[in-house]
Length: 287
Image (cartoon, rainbow, N blue to C red; front, side, top):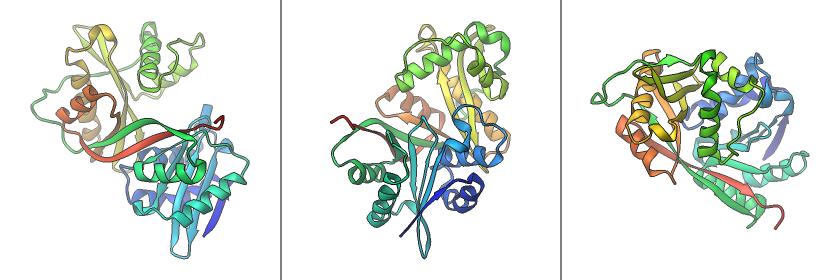
């Protein structure tokens, strides 16, 4: 087995893109990140490849493992064709140990994440989040289409609070709105964040995220507490999924937290079907 540590994101992209595309929907996050890095047009925040950990493990048949970390986020990992090889994982763990990077957590297909954690940390890890990856080919026709509008700068009166509410709900981040508007204006400026209105009142948001060849991600689904249990999230996700399919994508993909049965039920009602389970694992170095 050979461990390769990349400094050039274009070389990393060239060596891994086709391998990851064999399971495009499953690898949406990995693919989306290497596409961002290869394009090189957006280096804001975590998007600067100069700070990334980019590695592969290969043998004479080709790439066996692809690993990418975009600090401060977790390591994302894929075993080619979902075939787990302990020799390849041993090689990866040893290579990372000598790279100078510290891995605080990992997100990967469930059995791969568990096996990597066992080899990398022994028992010093904990499961942070059980996730399920869903894909959609067609929106349930029983859900009537409704219009959405792009988020705009005038939405700054409420949008920062909603985006931070999403981060609090999904990632347990402190519910605190930043005084500097740049990160919120960035989301508006990308023109992928959509607002659902009811009688001209904003009630829910969702975003078209990473766009690959035939797959796009749906994320940042949020309805503020006052408007919940009224069907707005279902309507909003159905509408944004229709919009993505109308643009030519053959699949929409999203992640759910299995600890939230409501959201899982909503997405299945819309027409999303599960394809893989994913784990987010944190490493407990202090123990």
